[in-house]
Length: 190
Image (cartoon, rainbow, N blue to C red; front, side, top):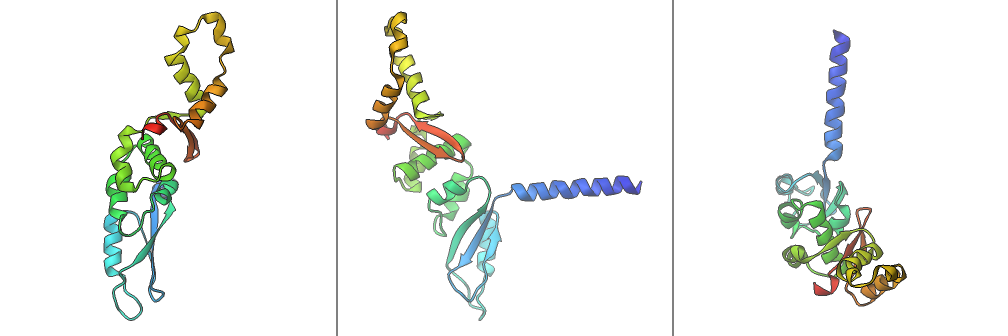
């Protein structure tokens, strides 16, 4: 019976450790050299700890550098330029996005220079293809033009040249996000 209890306790420990490992974590580094920073996981946690943060003389600390410590969205966090002033936007508007919307937001803030607020308004305007630009261009060509080309001539289509034209004209843009390759297929329209 003791062995069963040890196994159960061990599994509960592993489950709690896994849950903790999967949580996103952040760090608030005070600009004051006389205060200690703190880790936090969400906006409420940050607000409570920031309110309680005092320097060594007991004065409240008001300014923090916000750092992304662990999780899946570090590249997006950095691209968005998240700081103390827009931390609420991160937790309320960005964290709730699905993976495709996050990739679109990353494209808008890192490739086109939109602010986070403007990019959030334009997410639905971004058309993403999950893959390389050459594959996206080939698919586009086949959908739009291939049916008008006789079957015996389709082998002579230079998809690579078409992809290059799409890239050079600014119609398509390939980028990397979270280890995946995406292509914005309406880059010139955004």
